[in-house]
Image (cartoon, rainbow, N blue to C red; front, side, top):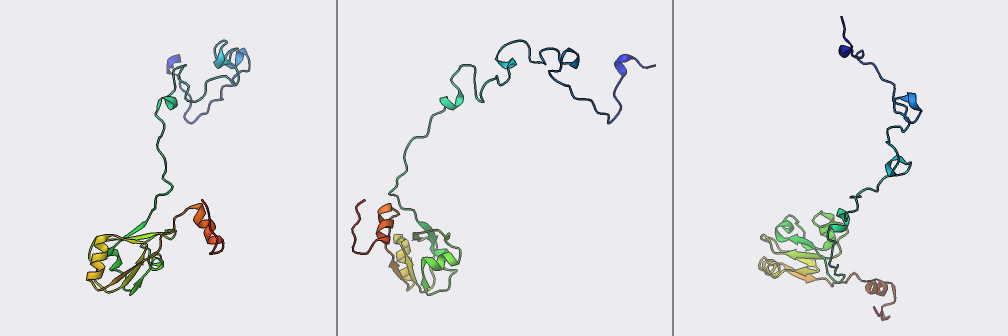
Length: 170
């Protein structure tokens, strides 16, 4: 014979959900499981995310980022000499590097570094070269050509659009 403490629901049976705040007989009582009175019992009541009981919250205790971004810094896309060996072209320009995937498509300035050996004769055009890269290219019988650096400032963008004789004050 079954005892009351051994009773279990049928397998895969479903229970009716508790209907909160539907009176005394709903199973959740007159206060609907919220206790009596206070901030938590009111609708819309409660604390904001990150509240720590009046203590200074973590997001205010953590130090804030300091420093600045140098707007005059120049960023180069970097290519090493051993990567240039894969190209069998006699004229290597930033456009050729972009087409072959050695430099990202939106790169504006390219710098050649001297990592590895350069083995064939070629003219390399770039915005900057390291001293070791220049030496190794000339040793292999190649030549270098430095392209002009154009700073990415508002003044230079305005100057490009304006006539060549116009002066721009930044």
